[in-house]
Length: 510
Image (cartoon, rainbow, N blue to C red; front, side, top):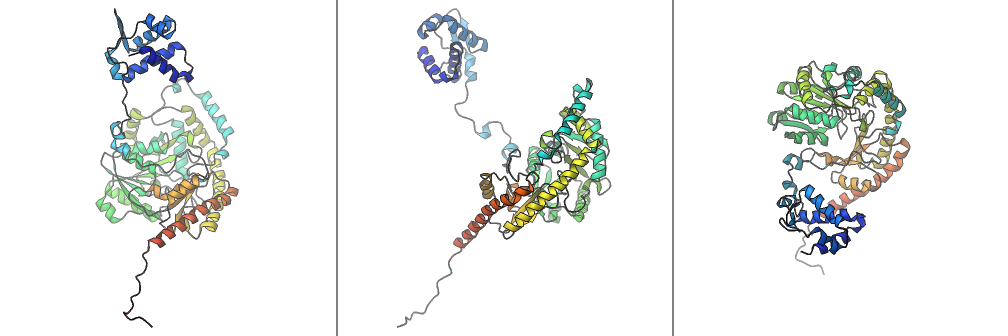
């Protein structure tokens, strides 16, 4: 092999890198060895001869050879420099391996595509609060105070269950505002709702156990369940929330039941009191645990906030999840799990072996935010603002889309759903078209947990959209929906066979 020609070709292809000659020569030789162009046992040209052929200083070649030797790509003996036999181990595959060959588990390959990235921006993105309204100056001062008060000991790994001050503050808040029956020892700090779900699915069920998830439902719960190797059963949702049948209890008895009773995700239904009590008693009889995700229950627009399921019955078999991503801001990444008192000790032992301990300053600042009353004040401001924005959105939707869709789930939370009257309308196609216009809605059908849920429409987050912009944005969205409704109707019309031709007698009229 003409080594000088190989090196010159490589240098020509990579001249835009601006590398010095020493590095260019080293990179070229290493690349040739890794690709197998220079096979194991091949002898490299003598440094003096190669330097003369390339027109470079001998030290340039010596540098490259020494680097290759230190990395194990070549070895030296009395006769010169030889490509090492181990170099073949560094040879990359000639093609990218298929997913099945890359070491991914079946659980990962079974994950469904998410409806849309949570961090994308645009009108109607679900789950994003009015970030511009958050009192950043106040929060910055609390963070600074927390940093000043941190002790040397607190620079070490933090408490496995979370900072005691924050656990106490959360327990006090939940008892007063959500009717949750708990002590601080039952509260465990996590990195958010998804972290809480992963912990619960692994800690509270074994591989192969059945978990009920609302259909349509939250994709994060589905991902956590599949990641834990659980068997997922989709339970249909109607206007009153999760609606399990006697056949579900008989044929698909659950170990875990995941539900969003205060504001169903994504539909927005509120689980009726009758169903809440029935679900608690049926779960107790079946030996199942309910995972109550109370992700945005702090925002109740019509009537007083409903109490959490966890506090509706004594010793209810309920694990309660909460987060500050919706009430404050998502990047805070602080959520919590409230476990039954009987599980608190075992949960603590588990967290001591697996929890990510840290972010002491954020936890201390949040504890002060709760204790000082500033959190409650912020919630009151946001409730007024979100109610105003909800009203503007509902009014615009009914005016421009009332003939083809029905509004659901606007009584609470930060999003509502628009259900199409015609199930043939392609909601996912509308989502793609809307995104081109900067409108980021989610398709309800994309949240189907198991089979088709029967919900076709759009999920619209309104917390971050000013009320005065609702009318114009809904008009743009309405144009897309009406066009899709027309297309669906035309499709049905053209697929309908023509009526049979009328049969006539054999006689012809003269």
